Image (cartoon, rainbow, N blue to C red; front, side):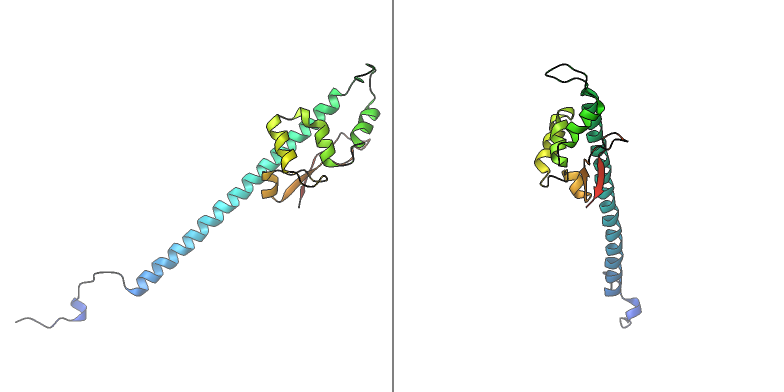
Length: 152
C-alpha cells in the first residue's frame, strides 16, 4: 500500500520564488559594487593622465624659455625681461601653447591643438574626462612661467 504524497516528502526540482529573488538581489548589489570600482578607477586614470599632460606642457614651456637666449636676427643675448614680454604678448593660453608647441612631441601638440575649443583653456580627451583643463597664465616677474591644472 502506498502512502499519500505529502508536501514534506516532495522532491524539489528548482528554486522557490523567494530564493530566486534573493539571489537576484545579491547579484544586483555585487554588480553595483563592481561598476562603482571600475568607474572610480577610470576617473583616477584620467586624472593621472591630466597631471602627466600638465607636466609635459610645463616642461615644454621651460624648454622654450631656456632656449630663448639669443635674438635670431641680430644674435644679441636676450634678457629674461624680453623673453617674458614675448611670452606675455600672446594673450591666450592657446597662443602660448602654439609658441611652445615645438617643444612637445608632434602627437601631443596636435592632440591639444585639435581638441582645444576655447583659446583660454587647453583641452584634451583625458582633461575633458577628468573635468579639467590647462591654463598658461601671464609670466610674473617673480617666477618662472607656470602651467595650471584647473577644474572645470
